[in-house]
Each structure stands twice: as C-alpha cells, then as structure tokens.
Image: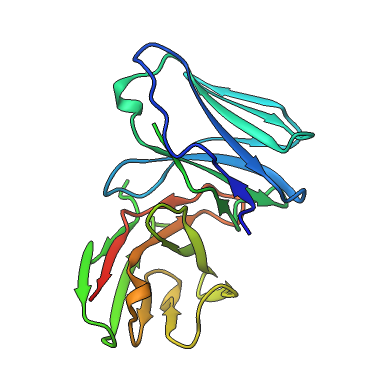
Length: 109
Length: 113
C-alpha cells in the first residue's frame, strides 16, 4: 500500500523554465510534508518542507504547495537550472514531526 | 561540519554470508535511523534510535536483521544470513531530536550474489 505516490517517474524541463513535481498521499493523518533531493551515489538531501497549517512555503527558487482537500502537494522550481537534475522524493509524516517519514518512489528531473 | 558517515560504501557478498554496515551520525544528533532503499523506490524505515534505545523497530525483519547503537553514537546494522532479496542501498540518517530534519549518509550499496 503506497501511501505517498509520485506518479511521474521522470520529468524533462528546459533550463530557465519551471519544473513542477507532483505528489499525492492517501493517509489523512499525514500533516507534515517534505521534499528531498538525491544525486547519484549520495544520500537524500533535505530541500523544503510544509506543515498542514499552511498551503504554501517558499525558499528561493523552490516553492511547495499543499492542497489538503485533494491530498496533493507539488514542488515548483523556478527557474530550473542544470544542477537541479536529480531524483526528487516526496515524504510525509504524522504528528508534526520528522520521526517517521513515508517516502514516495521519486521523480527524476 | 562533517555529515553522516557510512562504511563500507559498496559490499558484494554471496548469499547466506553475514554482512555489517556502520554509521557515524552527525555530532550531537541523538536520533539515528536506518533505511532500506530498493531500486526505483523511496527509502523505507527499518529502525529508529533515540540515543541507545531502539524506539521503533517494527519494520526490521528480526529473523535475520539486527542493529545496535552502543553508547548512543555509532550504529551497526547486521544481516545474517544475507539473501538475494537483500540487495539494496542501506541508508543511515540522523537528526537532532524527533522534530529535527533528517540528514542522510551516502548509503551502502549491498549486492548479494
């Protein structure tokens, strides 16, 4: 049972354009969401997070949007740069904590 | 500041052999995690430690997997005996408390032949 789903295994975007990565979840107890970025042969690196009391969080070129009613979140990268090429994992937890993360399967940008 | 250190980075063994992975978390991080990442999947939590206590090992296959975190710092994850299906990347992460961001090490890629 995949509680966090990233339905696009890969995404191709031109430099300078917007990248939009999507994530859906099924567990209504999830209230904290994160995006991690992973380069080959490295561990995942924390990128940005959002709690369920917000619907948007922005950090530089990265913005995460949360739609609780649709159980959907997205990561926007504007403008996209060559160094953004990586695998992006969506993760979720319950209880406003980080201790038990459930990860999606990742999207390769 | 040094990140999470894992060794070895790569390990190839034959099935039924034992194997062990080592993790040194970021200094001061009392929470340590071991994850399993299969090809094309996201990381899945195996075990979580608060200091030296395993507070969540519900996903650890205890018939062949064991872990320890003596003195609440370094940790070792062991598989004995290894099976073909254990081939995966084993990731260690640490955080400053339960609410802290998890920082991941580079992982150990295990291949079981």
